Image (tube, rainbow, N blue to C red):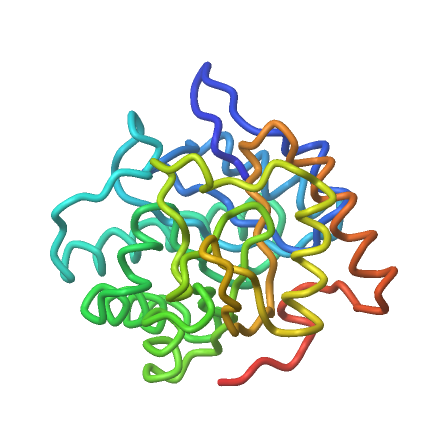
Length: 250
């Protein structure tokens, strides 16, 4: 959330907030600006929703979804900068602490498979605030790096994205990258939590841990997906709560 900037409006933040427990707030590199960051954390506080930083690559034009040739040191610096900025704004605007960090877009996908980038992100979070939860793709290098640095890790799954057989996400360049059918998304979400698996695009079952379910706020169906997925989880007897309210493996 909070991915609007200046006169550019993106997402359905106000409509989504009543149905989620944690949000990832853009920190100005792929989206967002200081005013939007303040407005977003203030709205989250009003709804009792936990706030996390969503640092991305410095690519407003590409919305942070294009890979860039960045070094591990550059990633460390940009994550430190963005997390620190949102932490300061959240403290000043609402007095609520950050709960977690989730890298955005291409940075997230690159760190899922590259140990050097995953380690840089984990070290940056450790050095800024070691109490923050680091969220990463289930089974990824990012989750392993978080634990190696002594951070609490949260394994994330995606209700609205296709999966490859190796557990990575289908490239957005493919037609099957996005799940747009809400009934299918609900079924997949419940299965990922209750059976710890998702069916990949080739028909194989991918085993995973589901501690957080991502819904993309910029998608036109975001509010409907959030409402229906939460209802589906609760109907299946699954408790939905912020990451900080549960015990996660260090």
